Amino acid sequence: MKKSVRGLSPVIATVLLIAMVMVIGLIVFMWFRGLTQEAITKDFGQGAQNIQLVCDDVYFYASYSAGILSLRNDGNIPIYNIKVKVSGEGSFTTKNLEEFSDEWANNYATGLDQGRGFSDEITFDSSANEIVLIPVLLGNTEQGKKTYVCDENLHGYKIIL
Amino acid sequence: MFIRIKKKGVSPMIGYVLLVTFVIVLGVVIYNWMKTYIPQEDLDCPDGTSLFIKDYSCSNNSLNITLKNNGKFSIGGYFIYATTTPEQELATKDLSFYITENFSQLSPTGVKLTGEYNSLAPNEEEVDIFDLTGLTETIYTIEIVPIRWQKEGRINRIVSCKNSKVREVVSCS
Image 1 (cartoon, rainbow over the protein chains, first blue to last red):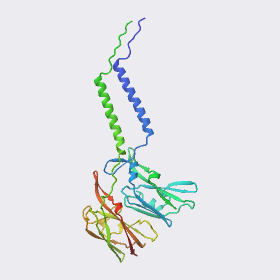
Image 2: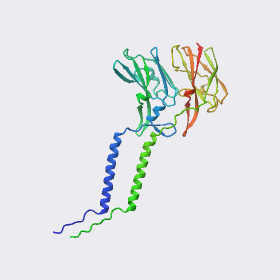
Image 3: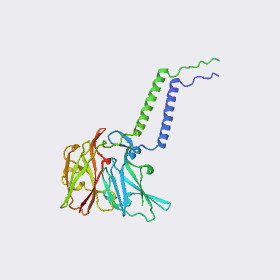
Image 4: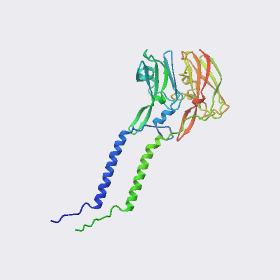
């Protein structure tokens, strides 16, 4: 019996090889993309910048006295929202500022824009001994606008009650 | 039995083209991803930008402020805030809504000085009048943060001169 020793032609083998590499490459890319965070950027005219770096340029003042929380954005980065972390007696809760303040909920829909100030009477739980105000920025992604909470340790504004 | 094996694969030229194309595509993808991580210069006014409250007067619900540019660079406007209680540490009451010239008010906040962008040249003065009718609280201090229009990349935008802030204790009721 005569046995055929011919295999695939080199052209088909090359095409198969390239196709396999491309498919494997695509699978690895999708997997790696799932591992990394979606890039949120902000553009102030100098080109898009990752929002993590924009957080470094956020510059706001805050004070809490006589039950009144005051905030002022003296920097050039608009602050879309503020997360308030209230700590006391071994526990903490984090809420958006609109949950504490109707003034913020009603009049600060776009947040604390450049140069804007905010002041409202806010009552925290009696056991609370510290609040941290964490800026939230609004950036762009391929899917549209998305918020980003800045790092609490790097950009949070701590107030001892 | 002698079997002749064809040893020719992809030609070296096609190999090079594929390799170079692959590297270029990979480079473009990585560049586009990494370029957003390059830190950009912080938006700020140049050192030497300064504005000071030369004089103020309060009468009949009106606050007149004389501002002088005592810096080295022209100024375009300012953010103005007031404290409305003696114990308030941070001035947050926005007084720009009370400026008498409507065209001077910036949105959402701020006062634009008369003239074109950055119109207040060094050593020049301007008097701005605020009509405080409707303001029920007493003003204890005012804080002013100068602003400038600066070309940042392709956009001419307002830049807050946060390091040139001035504070003045006033007595207006």
